[in-house]
Amino acid sequence: MTSPFTFFSIISEFLYEANEGLDQATQASKDQPVAFTIPQIEIELNGKVIRDEELEMVPSNAFESNYYGDKGESKLKLTFKLVPGEQNV
Amino acid sequence: MSALSIGTELASVPFDQMIRNLLLAMVAAQNDANSSFIAGVEDLVDTPVSLKYKKTSDNSNEEKELSGNALAFGILPTLLQIQSGTIQIKMVITMQRTTEASVNVKAKGGWAFFSASVDAKYSSKYSYSVEASSFIEIKVAPAPPPEPLMKAIDKIVQDTAPPPEST
Image 1 (cartoon, rainbow over the protein chains, first blue to last red):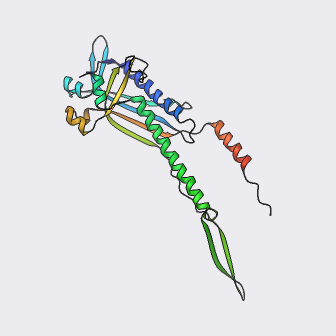
Image 2 (cartoon, rainbow over the protein chains, first blue to last red; image 1 turned 120 degrees about the horizontal axis):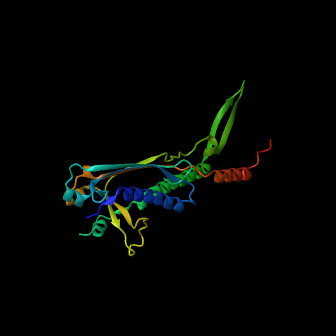
Image 3 (spheres, rainbow over the protein chains, first blue to last red; image 1 turned 180 degrees about the horizontal axis):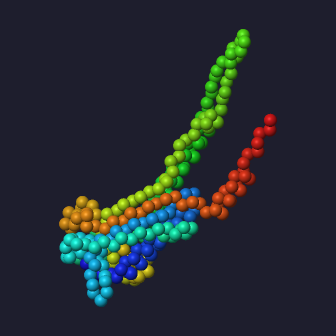
């Protein structure tokens, strides 16, 4: 079962991986006549917010849902937008 | 069952690879459409068109003919461009700690997100409802070409344009 993670870890990791994916695509298609970018990513992460020493979240999946129950799940909503003039989100 | 074996069984995809592959699929599809457009232009250049008509004057009928290729008559192939794309995915997300053995996984914090689509097989096998899954929506749009590249293209067009026909 997945360990709980702090909010900082979750947000930071999503942001890092989104930028990493966009950067990889940009590098891989830099010699192509067309290019695409990602102006916006919306993420709605369902899970359980628990408190250990600080607030932590366990992203929902089958194992967590069966362990904690799937009622009263919390939602973490994130919106990443492309910074004008920049390639990365 | 460990988290890693779950990920392997569901063929889960790291989040960054999902974004990368989505963008590259758009690039490949648009390139394919562009190639078809160019092939269409070449076909039209090789397609002769001849139009015959009679020019009637006061007391004579003069036969006239206009000929050229299809492109010269303004027949153009169509080109569809991807203006925007949106993918909405219902998925379960797991975070896995990475080890030195998993060298293909790049993650700043020593662990990475993995995602797997929630389909009927997953729902049935794990008694998991789609409604409880997480949700990601990725919007994709064409990136404007860099300004220096556009200036270079303009210069090439100017330098390689055919000279105007002398009358």
